[in-house]
Every structure is written in C-alpha cells, then in structure tokens.
Image 1 (cartoon, rainbow, N blue to C red):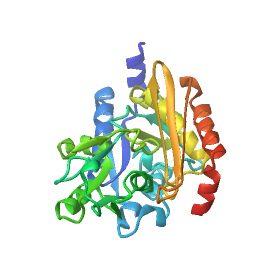
Image 2 (image 1 turned 90 degrees about the vertical axis):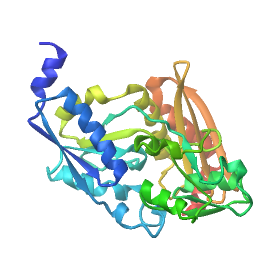
Image 3 (image 1 turned 30 degrees about the vertical axis):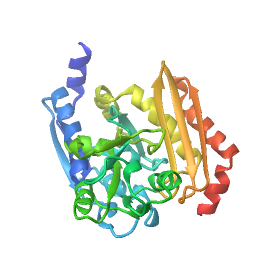
Length: 316
C-alpha cells in the first residue's frame, strides 16, 4: 500500500475545524479545509465558527486585557470537549507556552511576513508630515515607529482588517500599519501602498504563518496533517518562538523576532524595546536549521546581555 492510500485509509469520516469568525480567520480555516478536502475526499470537513473574547473587546489595546491568548482560549475549549478536532490560528496569535494537553501539530507555509503601510494619501512612512496620526494595534510596531519617526502621532487601532480599513477610509488616521499577509489572503493586496522592509519594522514572532492546534492525545491528526506541514517555515518560527519564550514575550512587550533561510542556514534578528522606542536592544545570529530552538535562545541571551531584562522589568 502506498503512502497516499495508507493516509486515505487512516482518514476519519469527519473532521471539524474550530476558527474565529472574522473574515481573515475564516479564510484561513477554509484554506486548510480545502487542502484537506483534496487530500482526503472521503472525509466530511466542517468549520465551527466561534467568537472569542479577543474579538468582543475592541475599545482597549490587547496588551491591557490579557494579550493575544484571548483569541485562542475558546477554540481550545472546543478541542478539549470534542466539538472540534483541530483549530487554525494565525501563529502570531498563539501564546508561546501551549497549555497542558495541547500542541501545534502543523505549521503551514508562510505568507509575506512583512508589515504593510496602508494610506489613501501617502505612499510611505517617509512622506507623512509632522503630527500625522498612524494607527496600529501592536506595541512592537509602535516602538519601532516611534524610534524612527518621533514626529508622528501613534494611536491604537483595534478590530478586524475590514474595520481597520474603514476607520482609515473615514479619515480617523493618515495611515495604518497591518500585517501584509492578512491583506494578501483577503484579496486586499491592492490596499498596500508600501511593504515595510524587515530591517525597518521587524515582524512579530510567527507573522504570516498558520499554526494548526490539536490535543496531544490526537497523534492521528499529526499524520493526517503532515502533507500541509512546511519544514522551512517551521524551523523559522521555532527559532522565533524560542526567543520570545525565553524573554517571556507577549503583546504586553514591544518585541520582534524574525528568522529566514539564507544559503541553507537560519538567519535571525530580534529586538526588545520600550514602547516609546527610546531604549531598544537588537541582536542577530545565524545557525543550523536543525538547531532552531538553540538559535532563538541564543538571540534571547544576546538581547539580555545588552540590557533586555532591564527594559522588560521597566514594563511590568
């Protein structure tokens, strides 16, 4: 029996995917559903749409209400009680420490990891006049913007992608910064005026990658999802998440980490900053793909040696 027929024989009769109900989250869940449907045509695959606490509280920044884990908890409850088999997440929303009984069983191929500059009037950050209001939901973006452009006014921006674009179109902001991946996946790539180089705006840990979560007792799903797993992306995000984990990173911390493959090796950069961007430490190193976790820990140690702990302590 070949590998494909073995997989088909092991495929379940039905599979339920838990997802947030935002347009982007549903696109991601449908993307995974469609891939799995092609692989396992005899399996009935459905999506359980859910509204999470992170989707409901929109009037304060995530860092003040408990972080990005608020987008994940309800989905994990559905996995725990058997209403769903897997949950599809934007990997940057997945906490660095997985709860007992849960694991990331598959990492999908990364979309463009960069931040995107979106504006109806200006073509780049450099064009924005003094006092222009820039919207972002991310302390990571805010700290890097404040460091490079102290003359700009950075204001919070919450809501799904469409809500953020509507607020821009209503004139509440001169520009907004969003993850390029989300805009591209939603077919809104034409709204991107400028892709911000990773050297100017280091991405969030896991940005652009999809993570699929299941219970640790569902090893059958690991084998089922293996065809969707991208080992290069997995190596990069493993390094990034190791760095963030070592620094106790969350969305309460202005922190970025980005790994990419160059000449067959992992090259990674990381930073930690105060929200105002006035104190920022950076590090970069290379390592072997199979030593991704060690590379992330080495970046964290390099940042610590430059005073990252003092910055982190000042944020508590």
